[in-house]
Image (tube, protein in one colour):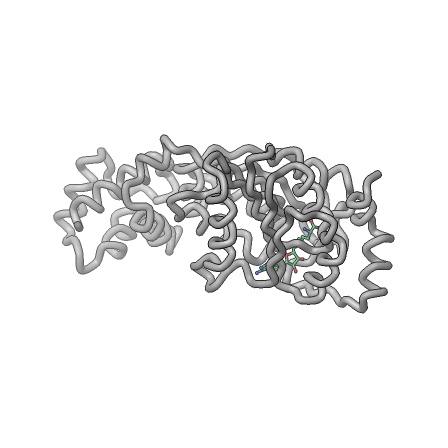
Length: 301
Ligand code: SAM
């Protein structure tokens, strides 16, 4: 067992936090993985090598960070909690390739922290063949905006290996006409291939959460992304269309393009795509939704 691996057992964490006088904050998603095999599974699933710059959001006590550092060129790790940041600094000082940032990974709900991105960019720019990856046991309260916003970037991570709540993993991977299918499923599936690595029960975390979690691998696909000429428009479009799930597509569309297209234009767009407008948005596949968005975009711009 290496020094890094001794950290993430229940007794070790309890003792370490008590010694350091650290109180945990539920609202910051502070649930630590206490099964070392699973910490290792995340690190191994991240497909890291000597050219990789890894972003980790949520350093915690630093045990995943250490495993990432053993596998990658640089780890940029971000922790919002000052006490945990200090604790992790003590442990991670032995890894010269770890850059620790004490900050919120999000600047606002809809914006990634630009300082965090600048730090990643700086390390990517140091060598021409460097690649960017995300590997993290994400704090549940920021997982959706973080993953969504990473996909708005021109250069997102090549691979995102993340532990998230199972319910969120279900929404990301959902198929049309199911209860979990929505704007997030479409936003991710039109740009990425997604793979479920492992479902994990609550007991592998401490403190124990109420729900199960999952490790997902989300891999942005350049060919898929190239089919979306205006990502900001598409992102807003899918969110608008899922504002009221029970409304029919035509009325949802009329609301979304109000002031920009009239009813006749909307009907023409629907007819062009072989849709009646009596469908619900949730019945359209990600590809159909992209087609619809693109046709609307061409009409309004
Ligand atoms: N990496 C550790 C592990 O695997 O056990 C900790 C993961 S824990 C689920 C999430 C961590 O993210 C916590 O340490 C929490 O303080 C931190 N965190 C919560 N919100 C954050 C934010 N907005 N920005 C950066 N870190 C955040």
